[in-house]
Image 1 (cartoon, rainbow, N blue to C red):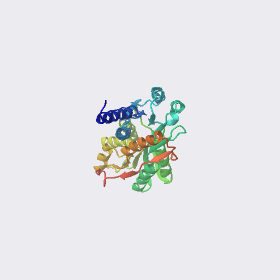
Image 2 (cartoon, rainbow, N blue to C red):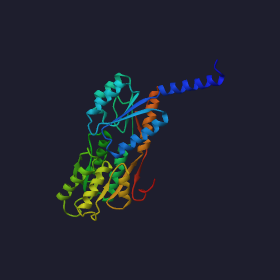
Image 3 (cartoon, one colour):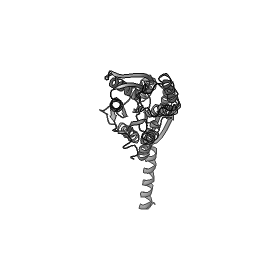
Image 4 (cartoon, rainbow, N blue to C red):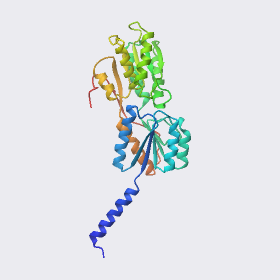
Length: 306
């Protein structure tokens, strides 16, 4: 006959095994893992998921947005409990429908809104773009040539370009010299540098370019490299980005052309995405389809702050 101690121990072991068997499995799917911001989102998500005892499978399609559809279909067949998406949902609707038909909730992590995405956790791209575009307009006194780096294929970045366009259009003496969509397959810095080199060559006179507005930091860094390599770092060209990743913070702290970026709380977005998944798995019906995580403007005054 079992003793009371043995019975309690056995019950505890059974409960532990039941808990392990009930561990949620979540797939995180993105074509953009080469981007520092996406890496930080994923890190934040995984940290929170570990606290929740989940099994997480991170899938990177290495720039291939179309492949996201088949990866969604794969994990749906495998029977995951939830999917977290960091891609344009409008481009992967077939995959989202497969998940929906299987009753698997999908949460966007800086993805974009879609009827088949339960909620999108992100920063307020409208506010971030307005802040940096207004910064540029004020710094150049509302006049001069501006080079824009945008990326319309990805909704969270596309909206930034729309807002910056509106801010610059509201200043009749600001001319957008070029609106560039760089190749991001290697992260975006190298092609942005090459594209900026071409713009510099086409506008050789000092003062011809007043500013570079970039929808995220990688193009801003590429533009900075091009400007410095061309020996034009003393022209006062103002550069802004968005994300405030470590490399951008270092550049801003040096007090050169790269003057400002907006710090997204990447870890906070990842953690909030995990909490949103947890709410859905608990059966909660979400009223808020877009969940914003606060941001902060970074300049030389606070670039070194933790």
